[in-house]
Image 1 (tube, rainbow, N blue to C red):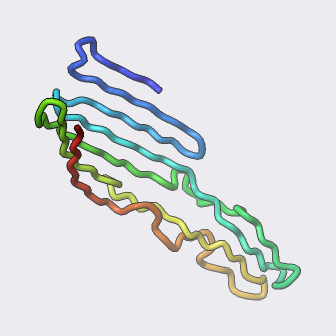
Image 2: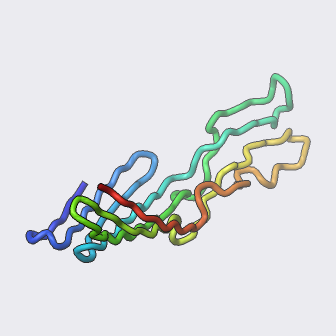
Image 3: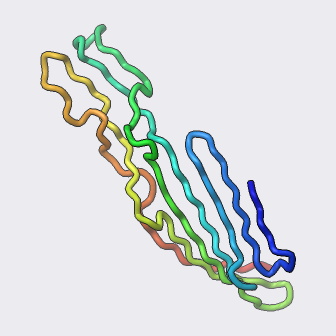
Length: 150
């Protein structure tokens, strides 16, 4: 985790990162005395998928390999989220804020549901082996909100 902060505290930038199966980077910056911006960037490697190998036939000869396949792309999951917050003075001891959040800002498509079936050698090969069949994670979406504290 790294933090950069000015001496007069009018602006600050705080950045933190974690890794383990992927990389998550978060950052917060004060743009003005009452406006903050923050982001969360998530990058992940390909998710493993199960492989059902019937190349030697069905029944006792069929093999099941849990997490036996993995998507080819190195960065398989990627998402950038942002949030802007405007703090509002209401009264002594009361505070409010308005915010806008955008999830998956760049509208990247993240895939899952990979086909892991290997048919018997006497049949045609599976043209969909290793291909995804579903989207995972959110599509680009916007959320507006208000908070009030006392």
